[in-house]
Image 1: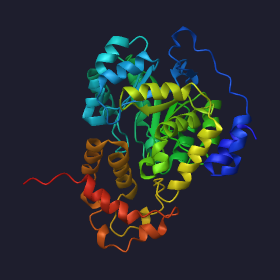
Image 2: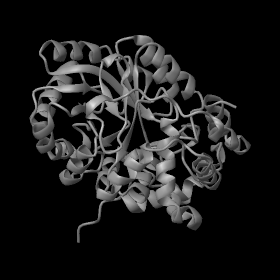
Image 3: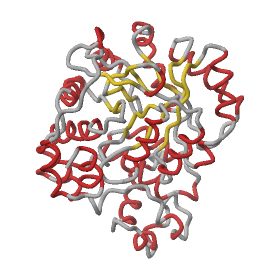
Image 4: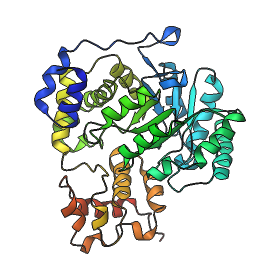
Amino acid sequence: MDRRTFIRAGMLTAGSTATAGMCQTAPREEKAAGPQEKAGMKYRALGRTGLEVSEVCFGTYGWQDSPVLEAAIASGVNLVCTCSDYQDGAAERAIAPSVAKHRDSLAVLSGLDCFRSPGEQEMLERLDISLENLGTGYLDFWVPHQADTVENVADPAIPRAFEKMKKAGKARHLGISTHSKDLEAMLNRAIDLGYYELILCKYNFMEYTSQMEIFERAAEKGIGVIVFKVRAGARESEVEALQKKGLELGQARVRWALSNPNVSSVCAHFSNFSAVDSYLEAVSKQLSLGDARLIEDYRRAFASRYCRSCGTCAGRCPHGVDVAGVMRYHMYFKYYGFEKEAMARYAALPQGSRPLACSDCPAPCEAACPHGLSTRRNLVEAAELLAAPRQT
């Protein structure tokens, strides 16, 4: 069994008997990164952009720790991904000193949330704010974030705004980012449109089984792929055996994503200095049989506990709760450690979209869940965790 068949049949569709085939495949060939390669970091071409990026790039959601970014850059990370809506611009401002110090060798990606369909003028104005926050005259990648529908991806304001940005020398490459329930349809639409050079999306071993084929289509069109949320919920602390293997599991997830040759980079959260060393070790080795077993153990443990944000339950809620959104912010708060950002995102939800009536509801959402999640219990807990403290 070759690598591609293993990933598709063995991991994404949860066939644990396939793990033995992985370690028998020859290591994939790596393109030499040239003189910039150091400290074990590896690099991959990013589609038709002409750039090579580190196999792990620096994500800034819920982050404001510049010294850790400096350590990551020193280790060979050459791409930092942010957004003007992360921490209300604080993430961009925290990056600015490193951008000023390393601008010639550091690629910068930013954008704005596009699920509310901002107009062309707002996109242009927000870019200028991002450039001011970052202390730079241009972005290497302008990427509208959090596209929630196919209509968001195909919004004609995006290419119009980008062409003006590019003409003004303020942005060089255009991408789109999504982790929506309609992710597969949205990625396919982005590829078909032809003007996107880069896609950023959720990618893990528990959902979206057609992503292998979609990434192959993207590669054929010269579209680069950066992935995030490879941790599939990051809930290993709930299972003692997995918690003890937390470091190895984290590295296995990264290796699993990079075992797809059409993935250019994994956007990762560097929570501390130790994370820098951990990610370097992750990229230094191929996915092993032990890695595959850890991933399979995790998948089995959380098959009925991890919310895939598939949206199946949405139409069954009699109260109009944004189940996928609330469950995502619950995950950010409880498992990712992004408490403030999760609370801010939750506070931005319309009152009617919050799970305020779930305690007394018969939970038709739970009955509709194809994975058997305890949806009501999670929503009730989310309402308690994410609500702002009352003033006394």
